[in-house]
Image 1: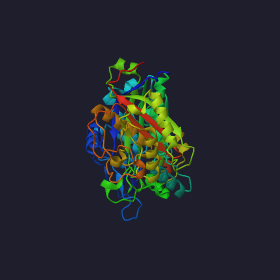
Image 2: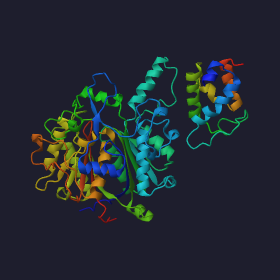
Image 3: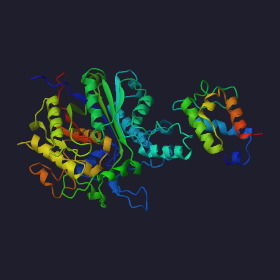
Image 4: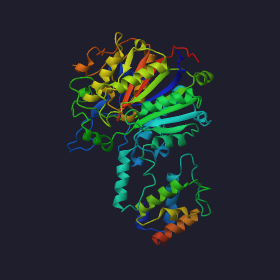
Length: 93
Length: 427
């Protein structure tokens, strides 16, 4: 996380995401597959429900220092969408 | 005379309390009158109106961040299970799993629709305070998704029901310090009415400044500094209650369901009754009439008389008004035969909404072990107790029946009658 905060880029974001998603998965959900490919669907493939997505959005705001409306996260469908969304918010290279 | 409704079997109990985190520790504490009350300094350096509390050993749930909590490995609780729960959810899950293990129940048996879940808890004022503070600081824009579900009074019920896939009747009870007792009483009825064959009953409370300090505004807290002597039910020097936290779980089953599974019957819930004082939002009716009527109704429900009761686990929280009203009610009910009366809150402190369920579970241990705990910290009984049998030491006397009393704000009174497992159910 420190490395990401010092030198944010999409590559580091991709490295951080599996652990971040794994932490927020509901009880009983299977661990996320590795590698975490862009086509994986957040709900159907990874098991992230709306509560988990809301919690992730709240945590992202806290850690990354930008503003997210919860409904923005609900619109995201895939891992690729999430990376694009976060990269855009952070204006990452 | 109408025959008494069927008794309901208690097939498992689970404890996370200040006097022990399993049945062996709790029974030893009850027999030896070992106190769980310790010095408590939740805000070091501040002149708080309370200095002692009944502390659960081995659990640290003080943080507002669930990721910081810790608990004994043997509790069998996983971090992901409790991340969105109030702190007492950890206690509750540990106690419930212990009770289920004792009853020989697996989680797979809970999802058939014939098992229900009743709970009692005040929620988490601490987490509610924390989340509201953050929301206000963000001008009400940033709202943690767990703000509601980790703090409201029903949180225990909906988390446990979802986690354990309970598909039978499911709800929480809020009647202040009688809540756990209501949950147990109505669970008995749920089985008697044939709606469920099994009920999980769980009560749990957190211990925090936010939960406890508001009671100082009512003058209800003890200001005592000596943990060992702070909680003194029925004693003239009592000056208020000592708070405690934790969880207790009971598994109730119909006689047929227990027999079908070959489950060990620990004790029988023979009957219960409840009433209202109709008097004051906080202060008990000084005549004790409300509690008297609840005791009478419980005995009638159980098909027993006052002469059948050998022990009363009194509600007595160590507050002057409450203890006095209960003593008067007991004197009115018991004339001639005097059961041994004691309040285990002298050892545990007052568990608020979980108190009545905790004391019902203690009563199960007393019936199984054949003993009656003495009244700790009683040096000079209040004048109102004249004629009551308040043994100072534990009696090695198997009680034939135990009456478990609880009262909450508004004069909400609940009484359970428990009898030993040697009883044969009539229906």
